[in-house]
Every structure is written in C-alpha cells, then in structure tokens.
Amino acid sequence: MTIHRNAMFDVLKGLGIISVILSHTYRGGTDPFAVFVREIAMWCVPMFFMVQGYFMRKPQNYWQSSWKKIKQTYIPYLYWAVAYGIFFWFTIGKSFTLLDILYGKTALHLYYMFYYMIFALFCPLLYYLPRRLRISTLYLMIISNIAITLILEISKTYHISILHWSGPNPLKWWGFLALGMLVAEYPQIKEYITQHAKPFLAGFIALFVIGLIEPYLNNTLGYLFNKVALFPMSIGLTFALAIYYSTDKPLGEKFLSYVGNRTLGIYLGHFFLVDPLRNIILPGDRFLSALMVLLICLAVKEVKDQVLFRIKKSDSPVSA
Image (cartoon, rainbow, N blue to C red; front, top):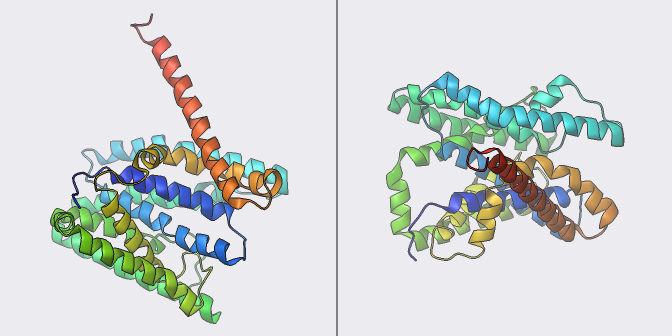
C-alpha cells in the first residue's frame, strides 16, 4: 500500500456532504436502515471540524484575515439563513428572529456555520501563544469536549438536567478542531501512519466499529451528537478514509473530489430540496431522493460556474 499524496481532503469533504444529505433525507425514519444511516452519517460534522483544524494557521494579518473569512463565508451564509427563514415562514408558519439567523437556527443544518466561523475567527489566536502552551490548550479542548459530551449523554439517558445553558456551545465541537490542529502540529504522526498504513487502517476501522456498535449496546441510538461514542466512530472513520484515499487509485476518487470542491454550496442549498423530494415528488424512496438532491445541487453549481466563467471571460480585456 503506497501512500503518495495528501489530496484526500476534498474526498473527505465530498463523502461528508453526501453523508449530510443522507442524514437529512433519512431523518425521522424509525426503520433499522434509516437509524443505521443516521448513526454512520454523524461522522461527518466532527470530520469537517478536524479538517478545519488541520488547516488552521497563524495569519500574517489577523484582522485582515478575519474580515476575509467573514466576507467570503459568513456573509453569504447569512443570505441563505434569511432565505431559509422566509421559506419556512411561508411554508409551515415558523417564525424566526435575528439571533436565529446569526446562530443558524432558521434551518436544521445551519448551526455548523456559526461554529465554523467562531473557530475560524478565534482559534488562530492560539498561534500567538508559545507552542507548549498552545499544545496544552489543545489537549484541554479535547478533554473538555469529551467531558461535555459525556454530561449531555448522561443527561439524556437519565432524564436529568445538568447543564442549564441552552445557547451556543462551542465546547461541544472544539475537541475535534483541536485534534486536527494537533495532527498538523506533529507532522511526524502523519509520516509514521504513512509508513505503517495497513495496521493503522485496520486499527482505525476497528475504532470506527466500536464507536458505531456502542450506541446499539448502550441504548443511545438517536442521541445525535450527544454521546461519547461519537469520538471513536468519527475519528476512526475519518482516519481510515484518509489512509485509503491517500493510496493509488482509490474507488470513486475523482467524483468524490469533484463533489468535495462544491461542499459549501451543496451544504447551504440542499435543504430546500430535501422535503419536497422525499415527501412529495418521491415519497417512500429516500435513497433516490438523496441522490436527486445531490445531482440537482451539482447541476446548479455547474451551471452557475459556467455562467460566471462566461461573464468573466466576456469582461476580460483580451476578449474585448
């Protein structure tokens, strides 16, 4: 098994956004297959944060970098958040507030963007700390994330209220971001895994299986992200896929990379299609609904790219 490159990140994002679509298409289903799909699909959000952490760096100009992130990511997200708010207000009479828009509560999936921006704006500040203090902080983030998740799992299992804060909770996700940052801090980890790919692949698959079956044994199915089993499941699957898609000619690499390069647009827009397809146009066929959601999003993005390319080309001095 020869590992030769690091291009699997787009593939991970592609698999992640497909998992998001499947999770939303199969949501609400009580049959064993629907439950199983949702359990596996939970790996994707931690993966997105791990990838974000891996690419976190110290900016040359913090304020300029922060504004660029807000302008390129958060402001476009706000348009979508408002659009979802208006859409659900007209279709099901659901009202929304300014805080709902900012926190990503106008649609089921938008919460991720709020946390993504929180981490994108504040976690680069850790690189202004001495390295030893930064590393210690990252370990503290991981430990506190596990602790918070355990508290949430206990609360849900035994129907007791331990945490009374119901607002945004970055501690619920920042351990995954810290894990990605730690891997980037120690490139020798990646080199060692590369040199021992097969045993690590087997080990991460085993870790994923443990995290996947534990909720079945512990009766915590459907807890969404409020369970500690999320850590071995998501970490195991993410690293196993990263190893496999860093090898020669892995299955579906080109298509998944193509999808991964369009992740943000698919993520923001796909939810408009989910319920009409699964409930009205293709009732009873959730897999086909998920496939149609993906293909429609890809088609729309392709058309948009082609139109923008032609506009840019027509406005260029050469064409003039």
